[in-house]
Length: 179
Image (cartoon, rainbow, N blue to C red; front, side, top):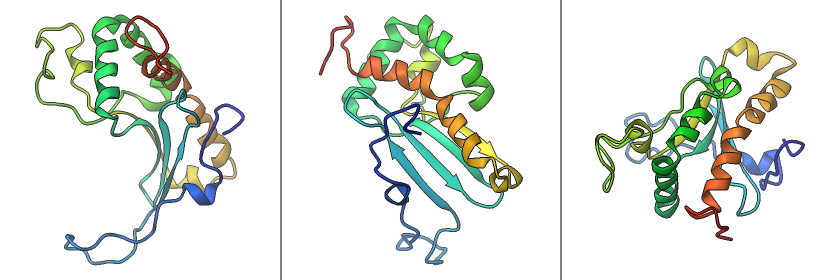
């Protein structure tokens, strides 16, 4: 992945999440997860977002985006959507992005976020609190010899979104650098 992006996570081993489940509040007291997962963080303050992998029989996928943006980042993203919603609409219908991931996913507020009009032309995008793209794999695809190459290609196809978001999150509304 470092050939097409700068990854901060030093190794595959460092990217793995723990296999132990938190069973304190769960009815299922099985001590281990039934999946293998982890993530890669993009390097430097300028490159924003993260990659995620989840491998499990009949439920394998790769994802990327912004799971829980900081409040000031979320405010800046919404500010950009409000001002540049036509650019956002163009970005979200990018052929490669749509072919690989379909629609953007993520948690949304039930109504217009505070400070935004309910009839804003981009209210459907302003309601997002998370900005996630997900690509599912079949078990056959995961077990194929080309899986790593295909997975890398899926992550690479997320770059137009990450490039745009990195630009948004490192500049103010006037396009002046924040860093």
